[in-house]
Amino acid sequence: MRPIAILTAAALIAATLAVPVLAQQGQPENRRTQMLPPGNQSAQQPHLISLDFAGGTLDDLVDALKAASPVRPVNIIYSTEAAEIEIPPFEVADAELGSTLQSLAYSSAGSPVTLGAGRMVRWQIHMVGDGVYAVQFDNTPQYISTPRGQMLLGQSLHSTVVHSITELTTGSGAMSADDVLSAIQAALAIEGADDETKISFHEETGLIFARVTPDQGSVIEQTLLNLRRSVEATQRGMREASDREAKEVHTQNLQSQVVMLTAQNKKLQSRIAHLETLLRSRLNGEDSVPENPLGDDQPGSD
Picture 1 (cartoon, rainbow, N blue to C red):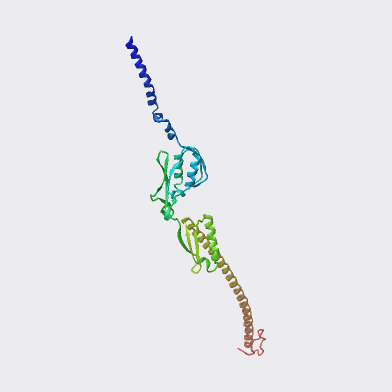
Picture 2 (picture 1 turned 90 degrees about the vertical axis):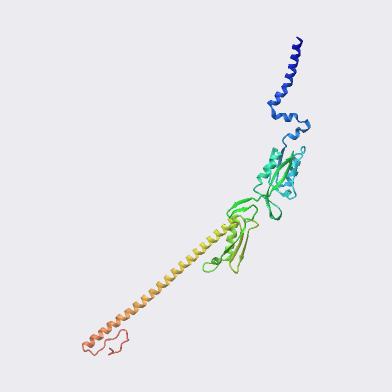
């Protein structure tokens, strides 16, 4: 019976040892956590933060993150150039630090950073170690689609366009140069002018020089086109009024000529009648001469 007791004890020991092994196999994701020393367990927990950031530079954000995480350190490595990156306002609650930082970089992808010599790049953030993040710049040339075609990111969309307004400011129905410039400025105010938008008028040549975006340039062209239509409409109205006045004068002249010719015709008919009477008297051998109602015939003439 003794050997049986020994085997039974060995079996119990084996069964006891097998229990944690089976538990580890059934939950492999917990094995590493269970094997870690107690002092390192906090490092494996998500670094959660709650923050209401009002917006500012990357420097301001790092200060705010440190204040919002007094227990666990915030380690972000960045250059002096990156310190002035503008971060938009945001608010998070119990959000993982790394995901929050990467989301900020992703959401700012459409707002490139201007570095030295006007170089514009996008910025990214990566985890480079356990709880350590680094801000890096993407120096790969980035292109965007514009009405003028593909343009390098950061390249100014503004270009200089030239328009002549001489036909608007000279001749009948002309506008003043001030009125034309005022109309253009009003149109650009609606379109949205920026600090780079500029307009200059060269009075001696009647030329307008404008530093504008393609959309602003289109607005200027539409404005000038409609001003030309307005001037043409004014000129057309003036021509029509002039034509009407000329027709009225011509009609009055015709009426005057009709009156004059009618009077002349009446006088001629009276003279013809007198001459016919004089002719009959001569043919009848009469010596007397009928009185000339016009008073312009001498007796015995003709």
